[in-house]
Amino acid sequence: MLTRRILAALALIAGLVAPVHAQAIGGGPGFGGVIANVNITSTSASIPNTSLINLTPASPAMQQYTVSVYLGCTVPGTGNNQTQIQYTDDTGSQNALVTANQPCGSSANFISNVFTFRAAASTAIQYSTTYVGTGTWALSITAERMF
Image 1 (tube, rainbow, N blue to C red):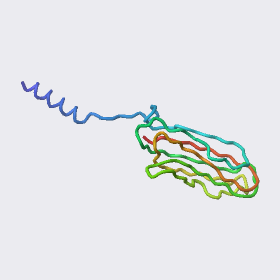
Image 2: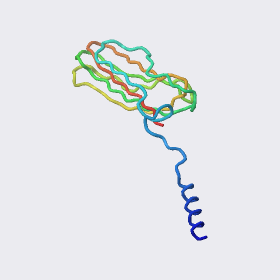
Image 3: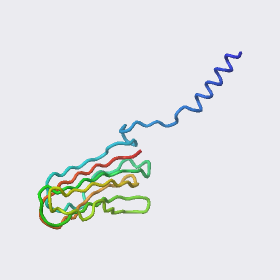
Image 4: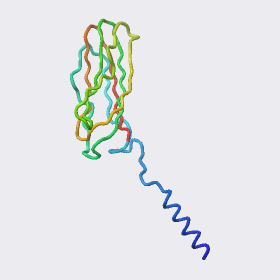
């Protein structure tokens, strides 16, 4: 009789502390991990709005993302470059300036930044650059779903 009560109590305790939702990082749709990556090794022109990733599925309605940007001068010149990330959140379309006015005066000129935001499902995360000047540069962007 005492054994049954102890077993019943242990079963109740185990049910109360068991995890309700467990997620493996990088496990697939709806889970965290790297979802897109772009590497441009050498260019001397601005990049118009370009899709990094189209977000699917339509559920959940909103998820959190992190975009890491590395922008570096590969062949020195004059002018500046900047990187923007475009996305749609709860309030509508957004255009975030992630790297601003990065000079390309020497190959030692580079900048990196990490930007976190919420984006709506069934929309796109895009990137663009604005480059004015001479010289060439490299760009690397990685997008991660946070959860």
